[in-house]
Amino acid sequence: MSGQSRTTHISSDGNSTTSHQSETKPKPKHKPPPVRDDCWSEAATFTLIESWGDKILKLNTGSLRQQHWQEVADAVNARHGHVKKSRRSDVQCKNRIDTLKKKYKVEKGLVSQLGSDNYTSPWPFFSPLDSVIGSTFKPSPAPAKRKTPLLLPPCSVPVGRRSKRRRRNLSGDRNNGKDDDVYGELAEAIWRFADVYARVEESKQRQMVELEKQRMQFTKDLELERMKLLMESQVQLRKLKAGSDESASTS
Image (cartoon, rainbow, N blue to C red; front, side, top):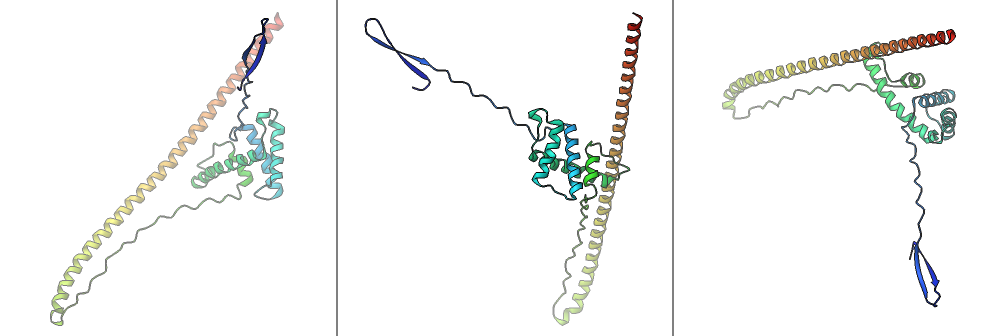
């Protein structure tokens, strides 16, 4: 029987009794979950970009080998790997750079589309990445608008006896005149629709640019307000410290 031990006792009258004792098994120790690749601090990410960028510029290559990634990981761990849980491997550093590149392509596309004067990326890692791979970035071309050609049905040629050719030609001329009017109205309606669609698209683009400008202005105003509050708090702290020093000196 698993988990139990058997003990035999002999009494004074010669009879033996057997007792079972249960053994308690030690509970298995739960291992802490591994550190996720996306749990990167801002300071560690800046160090990663700096070390990786130095390798890219020094080796003049777009990709690194495993030994280079290990050197990048060592540089990150030297600054931020004092705790075992925060240490990074070469694979984790490579995955983090790949994730940053995807985000950089999105931000760079917005800058190329809206213009550097109208859009400034608020992403903190955009500038250091742009200094490393900005010259090699190629924005994807905008998809060309497809124009649907106007398909006209082939005109039928009347075939019949020679004696009825003139009559059929007269009726065909009248039918062709009506068909030309129908096709002309259809073509005009299509051009009108295309004009309205182009105007709607231009209006959407102007609205997007205007909204982006408003968002950028709001971000700047918010940052200025934050800096203003920070400076006011520092001034108040200095005043309090000066007051406490004066009271201590007088006492």
